[in-house]
Structure formats: C-alpha cells, structure tokens
Image (cartoon, rainbow, N blue to C red):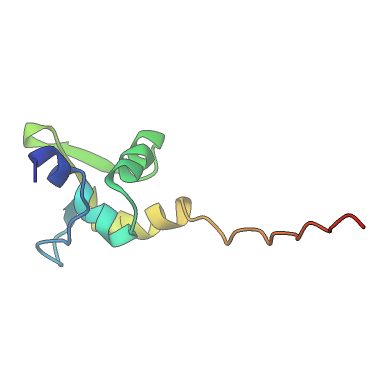
Length: 85
C-alpha cells in the first residue's frame, strides 16, 4: 500500500487516552473519511492546531462538538410514485 493511500485511510487511535488526535484517528472515531474531516476543519468546525512539521492535531474534548455540528439527520421518507391508470 502506498503511503498516500495509508494517509487517506482512517486509523484506530494508537493511544485511546491521548488528549490530541491525528486527522486519521478523528475520521475513524467519527466514522467518516479523512477528506470529510479536512473539509470540516476548513469550514472551521473544530479547533485544530498545527504542531511541529505542519501536522494537524484535534483535541479529544472537541470531538462531541465536531460530531454535533456536522451530524445529518435521517433521510426524508420517500413517496411512492402512483401509477397512471
């Protein structure tokens, strides 16, 4: 597997009690894609921080706010099309 593919794949957190998480770990916990997490960051949803080397970290305390801000409700019920008589 190339490093780019591994970078775009959500990962289980290495340390479950870590105060800050990588984008891939946040994607795993929220069950979304890494690109979705990046879009959320760009939209300003979570408080993210860049640390040494330009790596982005997200606080574990912000995850519930992150989830609530981007949660999508259930899909609307679809109406059946009535057949023409």
